Image (cartoon, rainbow, N blue to C red; front, side, top):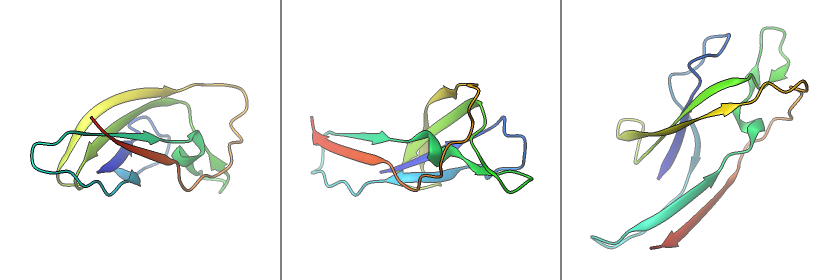
Length: 100
């Protein structure tokens, strides 16, 4: 399972979809498995025009699927506009897989 994000409100050109997390999940035919991704805010950042790492406030779209070509819109969330935008860069979050 793969987790992608899209930032349609970014102030600079961003990729259409960015792979942020993935999990190898084994399930038998017809078996249901729950996958929970934890995505730290610092994983949403990028280097701005002044080459400072920044996380911009705004709406983030979330997609999940088996590949970039086979994904579904899973929802949206909003990164708040707090006064301190000096979030450190984060490379990974956490994944939890459990049987239903």
